[in-house]
Image (cartoon, rainbow, N blue to C red; front, top):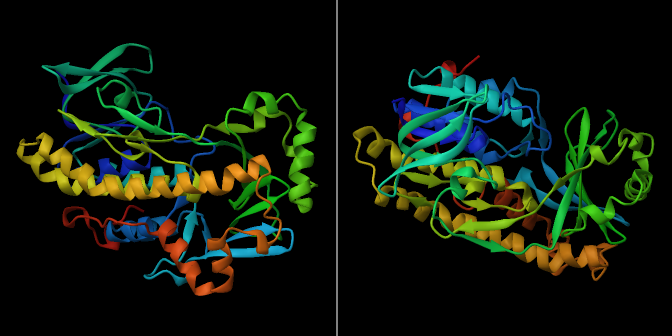
Length: 415
């Protein structure tokens, strides 16, 4: 029967990073990705400062620098009275005092190219996992569907679910999920960007609306919050009505909102915050959004997922290599990564309740800086404090570093 040591389900940031690190440990690892390529719209396109440091440690810093990307050094809120900075990444410690904005497919291609240099790595695209294979209540592999529709099976000492918030791996286990209610969903769309437009990333709050604008070079990725479950009702209005709402917030975008031809150009992100009570069972582990789905608030979900992958590789490489992997090893991953996820989710839930819900219901008027919540007013009064949210977002509560077995000199990076 076809077998591997570790089967990673999902070729996103966590899955590709885990595959690369385990392969550099000399462990046979197979990554199964259901899509034929990495080209998907509205995935998170942020590479955080801690991840940039990790790429340096892996010898991939020069290769990443050759990938076209934008740098965000400040985060701001645009209010009726002007821009209010709320995060200053230039105050971060270390070499990378910014967040890089890069199409996620380019980032994943970089990791995949590096992993393919390792003889124990295999990436199978167009391979959709449909279920888990169990024996005596222990997961021993996965069932999958080939591109031609035929069924396949892959046996493994460990199956790691890196397949996101709609994780098949998680759904096929007996692991229980705790969900936390969220009051908002998000609409995402793109608008063309001109060279003389504002750069970086920021938000706009006015008149009961909140928008986020992310500079992606040739275009802006734009998000706006809507009340939870209101998507179908709001789409009953004409797309012209929505275009006018965008122009009300950003008058300088008036000459390009026609890029929103119809509602198909506006994508819904259903916002969820949930977390597995236990991330593992015999033979199976979930990390990233499969273990703890994050809100887009702060854009930290990708960073947490990558940090999960690094901790997983460091803690499990030896028992996987020695054929002695047990539940106690999987428990160590959760013990290390649970509290950063829980703290971030608690902060996100607080922001949802105390700020976003009040904005969407009109209960909060934050049209000028004097009406901002007290923590945001403090950031304006004492600019040095802006390094705190910058650190929390760009580096995180427990940044992980590359294990020794995965480190390479820059000269060894993939061209």
